Amino acid sequence: GQRRVHGDHKVNAKKYFPLTQLKMGKGNAQKTAQKRERNAKDAPAEAKSQLKSNAAAMNILCAICKQPFMKTQSAAQLGQHQESKHPKNTVKECFPHLE
Image 1 (cartoon, helix red, strand yellow):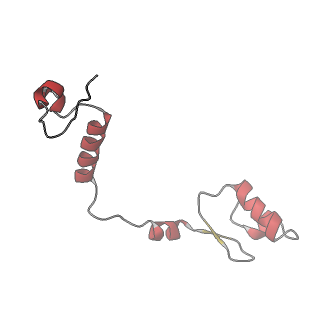
Image 2 (image 1 turned 45 degrees about the horizontal axis):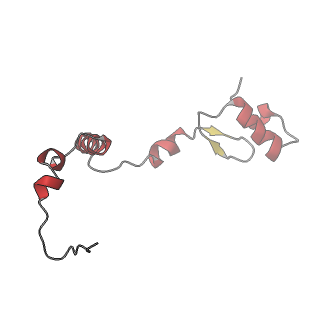
């Protein structure tokens, strides 16, 4: 057969890409982009650091080594500190404020 050469001829864009397909779709990518734009409007202008609030939350101190712990630490986690760092002392000696 003859070989077709796709040289300089123009392709009928309407035939291959009907107008309905050229419009922006309603897919997940578009929804994600819209959500990102909406959230960007609501978001604060600059990112806020949590360093100061984390430092303020370090209100538990080991009485022996003065290592600070966040107030969210459980008694079991504080007990692990006592066992690994101060095995000769009791948990009550390390953290006298615990009941």
